[in-house]
Length: 416
Image (cartoon, rainbow, N blue to C red):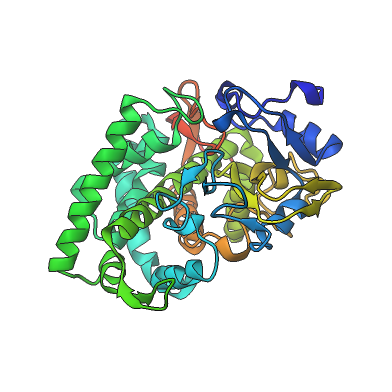
């Protein structure tokens, strides 16, 4: 493939999973590449594409140069190719904040995601996982994405944030509409997206109002009643306009990315039965298998930053105000860091993948996601389950998230 043929704006190129062949060319020929302006790109603008592990890491660790909020000459910014207005995403959503405000907001929920806290949740996670498998296995065939991979993160996220379990599938439908561009292109909208945005916003606003009146011991009540200093130094509680986008982010991140790692992990084991056999023979490999699943699936495809000043990166000169995208699945296939990077290896070590990012925006829920993937693997191994595909895998249409719509499976013979 020639560089001139690479197009990262055409979402149809991402409709069958992440297009690794394009990024292999970029890593080898133009690791920091200027994507030319494109009629389907938001604003028609060009943008930088960062594909090698070392360069992605450099962007992630330099929040002063590569801002999550915006840059010179821009009225908006954020972490997608769209320039979102300030106050709508940038400066309000945690992933679209820069320090020091980012750090103050992150502290609000940090305790709820510490490894020690997640360890205490392990019993509940295992109970939920067993109940999920007890429900679906008698059917013999089912959609693993919806019935297992999405179900555990949905239940756990709802529990953590005080969302009634009866409402968790509404959250699933809303978050899916946000991340799957099934009926729109970049920068575009659709009736489905508008209904999801308005529905989720109204639902969360009502939930926040209830927690103001009737606080509980879950994380949302902590956020609603916390007092932190604002940009002027005044200590105050967060407003609904700040909490609702923050909570939306946490619900999307807590359910969507983990479900795709779990589903993608099962697909990898189906496609590499020898690796599943190794896990059956050596259950002590589950922790390294979790890391390899994260590297292999890399559910978040890219994030965007905006250069706040001129910067040199990977032999290129990036100008202040330009959009800079960094691509995690590409960094996680970098042969300079990972031996035989296109081999799925449940014993891979070391495995310095960037599936959770790095730096100030390292994924808040990393410990929880790792634990959820591990308990699903443990349950599959404990029950001696084997799976076979029961139809075609259906991928979401998005260059922002690498996910599935359906993963149809049937119970097959356990091998190994």
